[in-house]
Length: 232
Image (cartoon, rainbow, N blue to C red; front, side):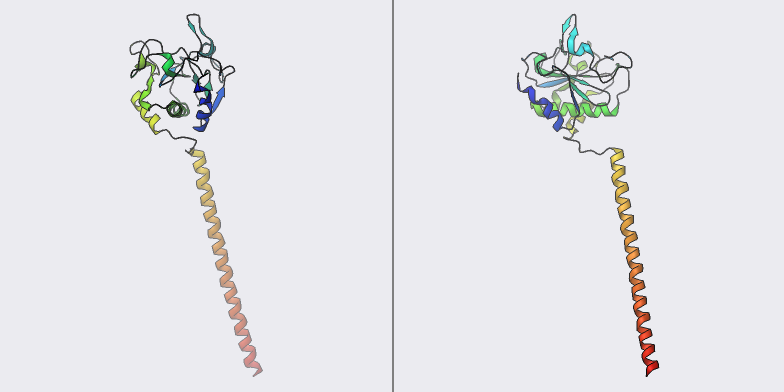
């Protein structure tokens, strides 16, 4: 097998949650030297109510086209299922910036009916997945395309996405899990506010204690002077 054996480690380094499909290491032809990415939607892929499972057609193919039909299947929650590390039959006739063969491009099938809105979690993972593949296989985000760009007029996927904007988001993707969620940011903010309030309360208490100690000291001094005068 080619160097793509180590791609799973690379995806995890980028903070992606990966799910390994049994047989992924040996699935797909070894004639595979990716220099780009083709992005697809799977047009539903699973029966209604079935989640967390790669559609069988992506793994095994169709009667007219042998599987695998992508290296990765991207769930709506952003989980990346690793289907194959070898060449997959996904792009078909077409080209993008000098690439024209399945042996030259990674294939990502994103779970979507072809009409449904794109969840933010899925899109963010998609940008990061493409960025990780650019980094791993050493090519620029300009080499990421939609199937509709690879085969214009023949393919519509991924639906509604502006691929220029998509590529820009791939360029801006950050390695690892550096971004805080809204919930994490709120937790940190609350902790800072609580700590500040505690420090302020402590300072007030210390101030009250200091003032009381000074008053007690003054009272003791006055009492001592009074006693001295009376005894004199």
